[in-house]
Amino acid sequence: MPDWLNRFFDELWTILVDSGIWLILGFAMAGVVHALVPMGWIRRQLGGRGIVPIAKASALGLPMPLCSCSVIPVAASLRAAGAGKGASAAFTISTPQTGEESIPLTWALFGPVFALVRPVIAIVTAFTAGILIDVLVPDESPKRERGGNGAGDAPCCSSEPATGSSCGAHEGQSDEPRRSLGGRLLEALNYGFVTLPADLAPWLISGLVLAALIAAAVPAGWIGEHLGSGVVPMLLVLVVGVPLYICATSSTPLAFALVAAGLSPGAALVLLLAGPATNTATMAWVIKDLGARALVIYLGVIAAVALAAGLAFDAFFAGMVTLASGEGHHEHVVGVLAPIGAASLIVLLIAAVIVRVMPKIKGGRHRHADACCDHAS
Image (cartoon, rainbow, N blue to C red; front, side, top):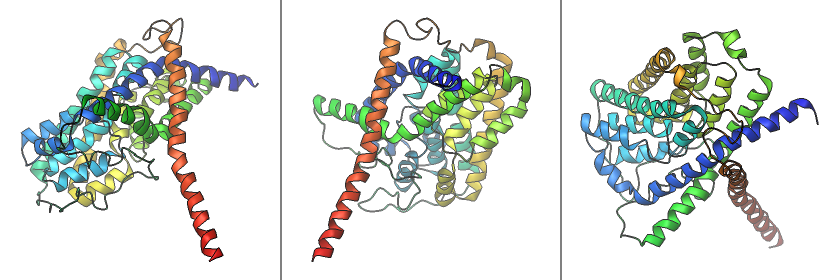
């Protein structure tokens, strides 16, 4: 086997060992939140204009198990249900920037300081954008649609979501009769370990593979030596990250590999803040439901706060970042749990790919059978 391929698999296994158990924990937390937090309650919290609903939207977005794809129909539903433009924008920013699965993963790869700063800056970004949009953009009350969620033709995933995808999964969740504890537990397990992994599998696998490729191909310190530090690499990361779809979870190992190769922690923070909250589908929805002026504010605030946070982090907290070393039993995961977590994550991702692909295969078979029947008749 070529040396570079050996290095790639070594780096991939190291990243899986460092992150596996934390991702498993994050998926479990996401399932619990999904099962316990009804969408109808969220709608009531975010209705109207002003500081209070914007502050609630900024905070409530953090624990929601939605990526930058699946947050769009939920945000459109909130908007149609009466949420103001500022609150809708705040929810759309804070939700994909962090999540239950990404926060413990960030802790595992970067240490506690970086993991705690990330959601705090996400709230600051969302609140600032929400307030400015609320003040500067006229808010025409959206028409509520009877019997619907108001999502209309809001853009969603760039590719067809998996069966049971979290893309819009919360729309049907309302103030239904109380379910049994066992029912909620099954719902949490199904969402946390079936639906959400199937939704994230392509992006998470891509992020892990790309991170291993960078770690294997780019020598430690190379990026710092060739790009330097300060605002230049941050601007480069910002320009690359804004139009792309990168979710909070898959971008975390990618940022880790870049920091290991010499990128400053502040520049990595810029990537983790700006990338998940912006992509072409999100920008299309913002223009459609909130307006062009709101989009300018939306992107401007995300970029400005991310750059300011990145510069401040490098100035005051860079020395507190503790990258996972991949040695011994790993500083952040103790004992035999690390390889068990890695193996469990591999199994979970394989199952997620199967869940995602099988409906398409079955659909193709059904279409072929229908064509045969039509021909026979």
